[in-house]
Image (cartoon, rainbow, N blue to C red; front, side, top):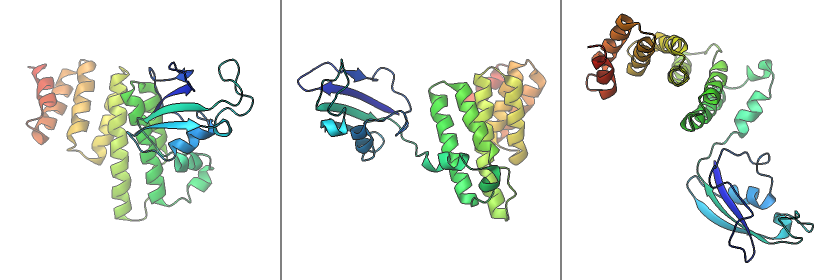
Length: 238
């Protein structure tokens, strides 16, 4: 996610800015100005920078009338709010299913985690439908059969995080039946997972299935007896 403002020489007002609504932008697709591409590649998350671009790195000899005159030198103020390296993930999803199946498991896990981080970013932006789609895409590539117990543990850990993400996201989408289904899938991996038990309890509460809700929440409380969120949900059933 990048926040930027572009200025002409001796001008205080920007000719372009996204400071009020910065979003996730992809180098080479959403950001095509050569100077910005080069500059952003030198920056880290949280960094703020100011770049001055000659015409060759900005809008060229012709400019971009009427806003940008010919041969204009421009200045950009840039802040990197968030950064996700999607190059490997993008390349993976361009492969056929057969080609994906030959990928080393560690790379598949890395791709899945990148997709999950994209989902988390979208979730924080309250774009719950888009977040759900990212989580599902990540989960879809974790179906291969691991070759060892260690690999099985790694796959299960990745699946568990995604199932918890999906359960929470479906609660936000006001679809408690789906939230319950994903929470129960998480419990198949870890039957004492407090977050999964809590999500299932919340989903049952939404569906007015109070006895089931109480059962899930009491089990969650046994795992985390001092968790305020769990205890507050149980108070609703008192």
